[in-house]
Image 1 (cartoon, rainbow, N blue to C red):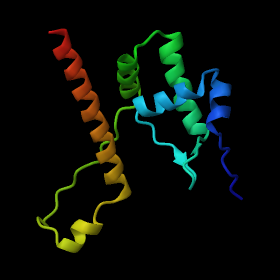
Image 2: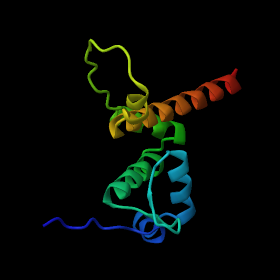
Image 3: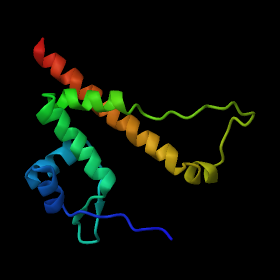
Image 4: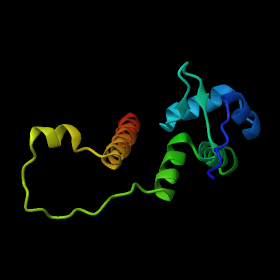
Length: 131
């Protein structure tokens, strides 16, 4: 039998972390964290989410990282997963394959790469401001 994972509401998560709810919302946006939402739009967090927020809190509050530094440290600690590329004799895809051929893992990789691009653009903007 499979046990159901424990879910937290934002207030409970914030209380367990010792931070305010607005900080949770800010980190969710700033670190591009995807959370589960009810049909009514209420956030729900699981144990995995709790661990992510705990890591962010540790990096920012205990280790003294800036937001940008924490993002880099998290990226260093959890590099994106890149699958193997296999050669194929097939070089074209039909319209049906194009519309249905994207698997969840490809969409996930695309999302991770999009986040990395956004992070790099942010770093470039900050470098331009320094010049």
